[in-house]
Image (cartoon, rainbow, N blue to C red; front, side, top):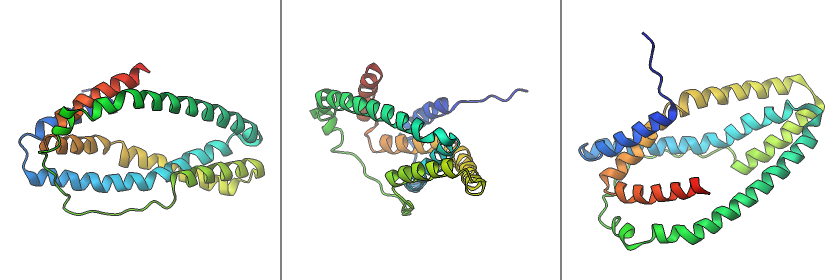
Length: 210
């Protein structure tokens, strides 16, 4: 019998629907359990994101070879230009439309009588470096490896890349629907989900439009 495979997007949609439905009848301790899990997972994401940047960008740059400098310069120029354009477009659109959507009387009133639950415990996992530090370090080390062309450190970087890829596949992607489920479970239990979804759908519609 062929095993049915469900894509990540489908799993997230199912998690959103399940979280909304479950939030109406699950007991408080279940909601707090998922709030606790989401807090720990959020800390883990904050810890792993700089390592993902370093572990994936560094070998990509080093594998380009001696042309890394010129190609990187062109890539950075294109990325910077598109980022500035996208940032200006996002800012102007957000400044013109989003305040009226978010800060209207109906949306704010929906948060006045919400139930604020706390996790059973919290875990602090500080990242080993910041995102920008990881990016600059990845560029520096990747260009250096492309220039000296020494296999020892490059092999170690590729091994680290495989560790990061394995972590993403086994510890982040499979857990992401559970994380999304916990978010919508908490919002539904607190009585926020419909007001948030109304604003969320409008904002997503504008994002797709631009």
